[in-house]
Length: 324
Image 1 (cartoon, rainbow, N blue to C red):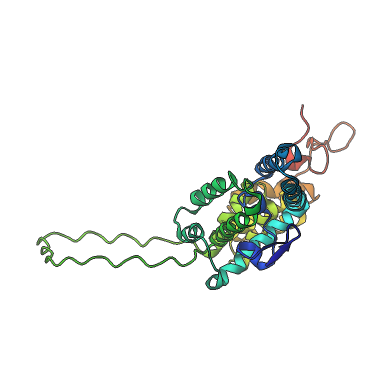
Image 2 (cartoon, rainbow, N blue to C red):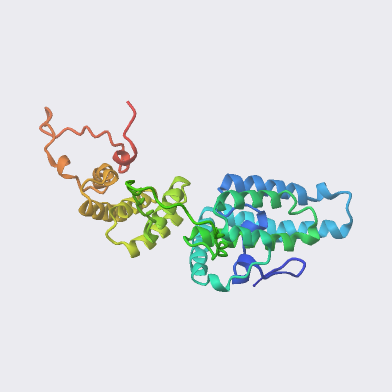
């Protein structure tokens, strides 16, 4: 349970129940919202709660609106948009979701919408639609804001757990009705239809990798790194996972770590295209030329080897040379 210092607000549902402030619920944005979406939502709430927008209400309402803005909304916006605090917050949030998957039996849901989300096959659509609908009226009644935030936080909690790779238990389907009519006997001389191959299910590590790829596309590299590290704990010889985490390290300018994982990827799969493409660039940036680069360059008239790299600095060969 988290105590938020505004109008003695106590929320003990959803993510708040686990001593964690759900800043996404305060702003009513999805937990995977980008900074642009968060800023747009923040500005809408700030306009609604600003004193100039409440000129016709009483002093008590103005004070309450000001407290909500300064003690809830502004801190949530700062937490979710500052690069360092946002990265740390997202990592902790992801870890919380994974931990609660193991404790799913103890998770209590209070609203029908949260229960529906827990077993919905199309979780993304239902979750985003529900968040958008709640956002439309979240701050209309200031006295009801805590209850609305709690409801949103329950949805965020379920979405985090489902995204962590495990659905909460859904009620079993009703038993199929039996038909008393005797089925017709099979036609003789007719071969039975071939049994379809069993559907393959992604391993847990593959689920981590798939989520990491989505995060990489959104430039959420810190969270992608967490997912890939978890995948490597399960499958340390997964070449694709080594290659992906190496790319993440490149994006974070951790070239030595990138080199280690590209090397591992190529040891496990010499044909890994991503590793083959990146490895020479990493070696060059680290001053460790690849085998192809060890061939002597032509000597110019001064007796010196000519430099045709056009690198323009340490990262020139990594991210593109000088324009000519």
